[in-house]
Length: 288
Ligand code: NDP
Image (cartoon, rainbow, N blue to C red; front, top):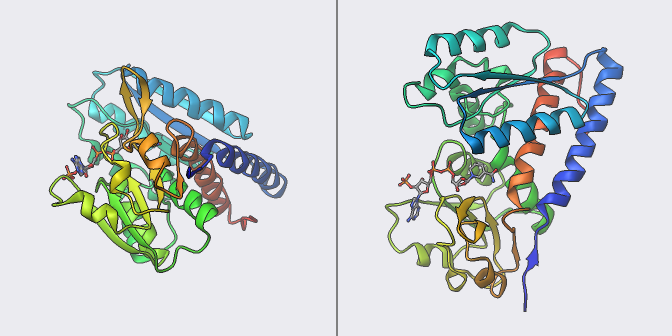
């Protein structure tokens, strides 16, 4: 038997279309067009691709896109000054600084400088705290997209055993918080975890966010498990995830492909967060 392939690309296209409709409704209600500012430091080719596709998706959703490109050797104070200007710019509802930043820049200082109410990436400690305590804030886009795919595939997640492999601030930790909020029983695994295969074998939901090509083996999985592969690894054979896709397909109930799974959801959730921010800042209720 072969698992269901979770079509993140199609789900994301639907979400982006709904955001586009929301942008039009927001404009009718407020006279404003939501705006997303993206800051790119340096010439990293992968980051440049992400920034281009974020700008394109922003414009396609009917929002304004502001791109700020700074040289790789930019002074940290000059970068912080750009963020201060964007914080004060009434046209800007969301600010995203493309990571990673060059080594001479203190990434945390930059993230913390963004106004938490414009932090559509959800990386500011205030938004991490809001998520952990169940308050309204901005949820990081990649884990938010994973939960949407899970609920679309499984319905109610309450009581399910979930394992999140990876504990980064941008994926693993917020992912675990979101699954706790969905009443899953959550295990967070990382590089020090003993017997990862044994941990994975108990899980109804497996979220792989490690960054190691095909390290999660199909034979580790519980039959019927739902597998969300966040990993993006460039190999000689092309882009692959953290999960051995072919192996997973013969054991799991449902699997996200790489590419075409979680990746497109990240951008769609970023657009959604920007629309949410515009509504909050204008005091206009958002209809979904
Ligand atoms: P990080 O490198 O920040 O974190 C990786 C995590 O994996 C760490 O917690 C690390 O553990 C853990 N880990 C490393 N080796 C092992 C191992 N052998 N066994 C178990 N756990 C291990 O990565 P990110 O969270 O930023 O990203 C993870 C992956 O997701 C990457 O491939 C990235 O490209 C992709 N990604 C995809 C996105 C998308 O839109 N689809 C968006 C963001 C990321 P420890 O903490 O102990 O070091």
